[in-house]
Image 1 (tube, chains in turn red, green, yellow):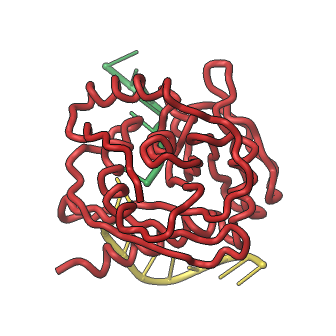
Image 2 (cartoon, rainbow, N blue to C red; image 1 turned 60 degrees about the vertical axis):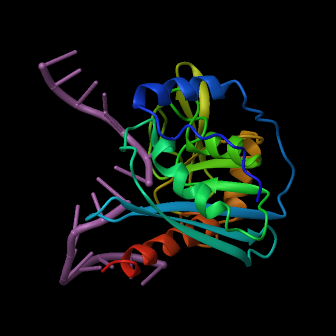
Length: 225
DNA sequence: GCGACAG
DNA sequence: ATCTTGTCGC
């Protein structure tokens, strides 16, 4: 797995903000066709230490079979600051990514992409660093306003901010809380929404993301004294 | 000053 | 994110 060598994760919150603005101009955001493989990522934390666990699950785009998976443990040094989540979670995610044997064509991230104060959330950061299409699929809002989408699976409502659409609020399951989908890198909103809906299997979250969550949750309970 | 605030 | 039991619903 090839990773762009950008090693600026040991910076202050102020520097982090400047870095996001600089990298923002490097976004591709062009539409990409169907993906052969889709990966889901998630990170869990240990409450009694600074340990954090990252997990990635790669699944086939058609049959949604698990093709590969990787995990990594790291120290959460950067604090959690709304808008700067990337700087906290990416080190662990990259570490897990390097363990993968099977390449992924698309990455579904547990957080926002374009739907970010500086239009550069976790999904954008990861897509740019790993050089692949990425989608932001968050469980709650960071910025923007929206109307509640209708209760049927597939219903959408635009997520607006500063007079522009930054993503969509998507119902992935009937009567269940919607998710917030936005472009990461190398993908357009329609493809992002389509990919999320296509990878959901009866649950609120896309299967790759859901499995990555289960994976890191077990790590948190397992890898403790 | 007050409220909001991905995970 | 994490701390937590039972409980309502499919």
